Structures are given as structure tokens and as C-alpha cells.
Length: 172
Length: 190
Image (cartoon, rainbow over all chains, first blue to last red; front, top):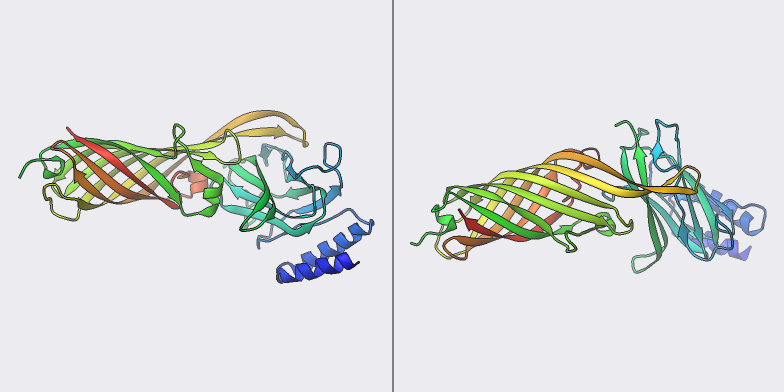
């Protein structure tokens, strides 16, 4: 419980952005620590209406064994084809230690499309779904997109960074 | 007054040089690095027609290759045709630096290529390289200095900014977006 309180204080310092989402994630986190839930939700930092959510899967990596390193796993479906019936992209990652994490989605020239972040995530593996749409709800242009996981990202140091390439095929 | 490249003694000259790209956007800088034949350079060459001592009409070709920093095997290549005009701001004087301004139309084709881990359910079933071409037009702005080396040769140092007119994501212009190229060319009178 003391741990939960300290987490709450830490979250308050990050500002009022996404207060409701933070409250929900904190509640989930505290419950998770108590062993009653395994969900944790990363909230999206941008104001775009189309978001995705991330949930903690387990304390283990998707393959097997304990979480021994920070990892970003293959995206799927890839290529993503809306004409083929695809609706969302699944992103999986794991953290070896309790860390801050950012899942950053950028187009081919590095413009930010979406960002999911959380200041404190327990070790374990996470899965999220992202709806690849523009801020007005229309489809993203066909092409390449970077999906990047950044762990403990600060101005001076980032402990882990890895990108995977997503190819979106639309009829544009 | 002896003749040289800028004294209107030659009808045209060819030029060839290199430049480096200084991106202003941090996200671009993080994701890409300029790499042409293993070096952080862009290639620029062409032919320039001398109209008079103060005006020229260059037809340049620029080649740019950027490699993705975090995705092995991913790159974007841009080839750009640049017809334009160059105006020398100062009058011609023998063996002296001259300042010039230039503008050009940019006709570009950018090709982006990258390997994709094929997956429908999280398990990678293979890897396939995808490629997509983008076409764009834009406006180029140049500012530089020229200096005659010999009667027939000279050197230009310049800064070049490319402004794609079409949306860079839907129409390309991926090469020199949000930055400035700084370089030099060697020129030879014909």
C-alpha cells in the first residue's frame, strides 16, 4: 500500500494530463500489485481521439521464460491491410525491471503519429492494440511507419530503444 | 581583365560536388543518417548555362541516400532534377569571391525501401522487402559564394534549402525535409 501511495505522488507530479486515465491505471496497478488483476493501461499522451490500450499480459515474455531483457516483439498483422480486413495493429513488449516506457509511432520521416507512455511499469510483458488512423479518423497513408519502444527515456540517457517497421497498405 | 568562368567567356560549365545535410527536426535526426557510398554526403552535379556575367541557368541533379538508424536494411533514396536560375549579387571582379542567390524547381522521386517481418499472429513467417516510390515538386533556395581557381575552373560553396510543395508523406520529398544542405562544387568551363 505504501508503494501505491508513492506511485500516486509520483504521478501527480507529471501534471494533470490524462487524470482520469492515470487514476484508472493507478487503480489497476495497485490491484495488480495485490495480485487481483494483471492489467495495466498505458495512456496516450497526444490529444488524438483514436487511441489504443496496453495491458500487462504476465510476468513472462511472450515466448517463454522470465523477462530477462527489455524487448519489442514483432508487430502483427504486418503488412497491415485495411482492404484485407485488418483493423488494429498489435504491439507487444517486455520490461525486465520496473521502468518508464514509451511506445512511439512515427511516419517515415519521423513525424509523430501517436505516443503511449507510462512513467512506471512493473516488469513483465505487455500487449497493446493501436488503430492506425489519422487524427480526423481517416486512414493513414500507405507506407512505412516506425514503432519504437523507449525505456527509461530521459534527456541524458535512454536505457533501451528499439524500432520495428510497419508497412501499411491502403488504396491511396 | 583576363577571362574566367564567370566573365562570360564560356557559354556553359559542368559542375560536380558534395554536400552534407543538417536536419533541423530531431525526429528525423534520430531515425536517419545520410549515407552515400558509406560517407555522410549527398551528390550534386550538373550543367550551368551562362547568360551574362550576373545571371546563369543551372540544371542540377541531386542524389540523396538516407539509412534508417534502427532498422537494418531500410533506406530512402531521392533523385532530384533542379532546373533554376542563379543571380550574382555582386559585379564580376577578377579573382574575387562573389555572392550569389539561386532558386530552382525541384522535381523529385523518392524511393523508400525496408524489410518487413511478415506476421499475422505474432509469429514471424518470413521477411520481405517492400518499396514505395513518391513523386513531388518543390522549390529550392540557394545562397553561396563562388571563386575562380583558374581561367577555366572555379569552386562554389553554398547552402541549399529544399521546400517540397506536396505533402511529403503522400507525395514524397523525403530527402531534404526540414534542414539545410551545405556543400561545395568544382566547376569546369566548356
